[in-house]
Image (cartoon, rainbow, N blue to C red):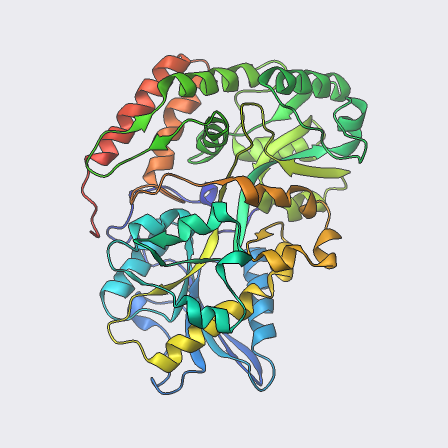
Length: 456
């Protein structure tokens, strides 16, 4: 199953607000001489004791990585904790979901923030403008070998607010396609290198689904969306961005959405998932199980499903989400490092926070083993990354990454994604027309735009 840092596994609620519960905490303490683990539960105020302000080597780090991702982060922290210049790290793991973002906001507002935290880049617009984060010092980062040129422009541009950088991306985790190489080969969908050939048009994608269905004798392309709070939006957002149209949610104004382009996209989604060639009524787990069981030749999933799929024995291929309209675009998000606001940060500790972020980024090859694309481009250039299959086959997704609109109520685990998915689900199930679905999406977006930002 996917890591717990992805939104399909939790209920969705509006952005920052009352915490829906304490959630699980796990505190891990790492030092240069080794690592020890401590399991603890308790309220937010029960965090680990903070090292003295003068002890800049001891860093408090918050993240939301559990399961397989959590173990990989353990390995990365252990790696940077070794040797004479290693870090002493107090790592606190909190439950993924709205509660994580509530606690992050509360800690920054209440003066008990960690030194470093993980934030989905799509949530930055809800935190940087409200003063809940402090900007990075790019000169200090450069001292430790990390600069703007080490990231793709598509991702880097989303790290900024009012000309300052508030987030340093660790990865890009896109919505992609996995496919059975044998089935795709028999369906004539592979290029001479044995990779998925470009689609190039809606017609080509529809024909690919039919060809895969004929080969498998069951379904062509599997996509789970029923009762899911993000999947339909991910697919729509990628396809809509491929049309070149803008999806803008300006504060204090009305949603700026090209309704003609949006109707074109929803109509194509209805054609693709027609309930015959490709099922239209699967939930996420059913689509995943169907692909694992050979009941489809291709599945549209998050790259975080790679570890599960690699254990299946399927001759697995993967590719960025196919371009079918005017330009390539892949829906994605990014786990990023941020500096939660501190009223009087200790300069030495803050410098160590920058060094820590830089050192962790350079461990990204470990992170890539789970399927995530390292945002730090020098890792992608390493020969060892090229040998990772099928990860290296979809690494280009980072070049054409599309995130949620930069607004406080959008982003990972947000109510915005949920409210966009509801009309899209109805359209795919055949309950409403594409036109009606788009009208409802516009109404929902305008309703959210009328709500005040609770952390402004």
